[in-house]
Length: 480
Image 1 (cartoon, one colour):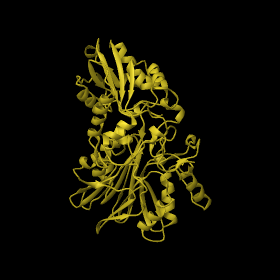
Image 2: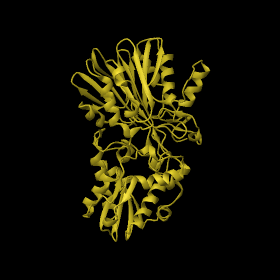
Image 3: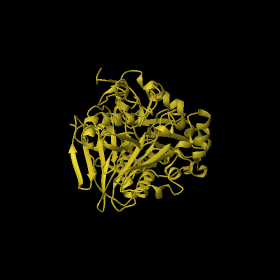
Image 4: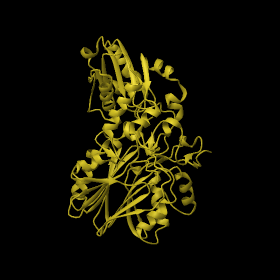
């Protein structure tokens, strides 16, 4: 997995319809708040009623939009995007939004998620004469809209998304409108906010907070929102067979201060720590987190277990996620530069180390080794998620299954590999109990292999085509 042990959210989006506002600067602030969702490229399209202005580049949002760029992006509608790519697909041509000109005008399109039938659609469109300039599945969506472009843009969107399978949260801009669409399962998050008379749509509520917009609600699965000079309208355009919100958003991907689909992220992570302590009581002197993703769960564990909580690992916050590269030698050095133990606090102590998840295991092993070198008496690793045994096909850059350590090793084998005195995963039943909802409203396929929507045929996840949110696969019906 590119970038270390953690799953990578593929991207984040921010859109605003705000006549009289500096929508480019507000979009920049929103993207800055969503930077954790994508650090390889950033882009923004701004419409002024007549045309669409586009600027995008590789790197972090402040790098891409520095040097007075925002002053040139004039208009009253904007869509912005931050992106991760899979290994080998970090190219400016795939940075979003993508802007297209078709029979009805200009559209700017930003996408978060994975289309599991993008390969099939791409070949069909190419055979019918469509030309592709990127390897992004977002371009597939744009071509579908053009194929159905005989009427209003809203009708083009509806006809296009009816052909899509998999996960997508879409932000679409025209010269005069802002449109948002969420797939019928609600895999990836999307929320609506209000800033005076302006409307804002974003991947997470923390982006609304960044521009002082009021959170209104989450966009419903299968819903299309349209904002124009007449205001906001809502259209339920696709039936929702079931809800399948990505549970990894709550475990790791989302910012702790975000609120999505009825749950506050920090509160749920803290409850995961409570549940871990109920499932596993380990003799220890103190609880420490792997910063930053393990902090909330570690606090919860310490509270429930009645143990002291300490920050025993100091994080160098000038080392971003993209600093750690896929090469093992660079990754090993990156762990040392990113985290450093506090020896005086740890020496001679029995430590419970809490992290959100374990995917490949290499980084966790390095952390355990560092704690050993600091003189701890014992280190028990507690994880706020079940074992990750299956790839994600709906918008997270998880490794191929061969690289998922829990897919081919027992818990005891992983413990020995890490060099820990104990290894404890939150149970899937315990994770579900944390949310206390009636019925299954989450996608937990990465733990169970129970995929709620179409999944790719075996082996297609190894293709090198990259999409706006991942790779291109062929679909097969669930259960085949």
